[in-house]
Amino acid sequence: MTTTFSKEEKAAMKAAIAEKKAQQEGADAAAACEAAIAALTGTDKELAEAFHRLVAENTSLAAKTWYGMPAYADADGKTVVAFKPGSKFKIRYATLEFQQAATLDDGNLWPVGFAVTKLDAAEKERVAAILRAAVGR
Image (cartoon, rainbow, N blue to C red; front, side, top):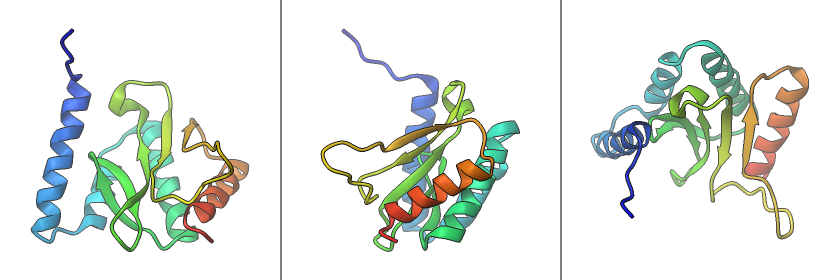
């Protein structure tokens, strides 16, 4: 069986390589994150902008990109959470994806990904609480 990557997966891998190179060259990771958000359209853009504000208001995570997606890292540079636009992989919703550096541990089973189609006040508060938990606040 031959394993092949989709066009979107290949683009994400190329973005990751470019991010590593830019990081080594001292590029502005926060500006790259803002550019990734600015490049989005429609609901993905609205959600990414709202999520970006929630991260800034509730954590001290640093904005960057991760596989070409808006992401946020801890002081050690480890990605804690990324915003995955639905349009990037042609799926019907965006996702908030928490990585190993997130401190969401709750017993033997806990969620690390959340589908999101809209961020009203109630969802924003829920996401803010999850972000605070992810960084130990």
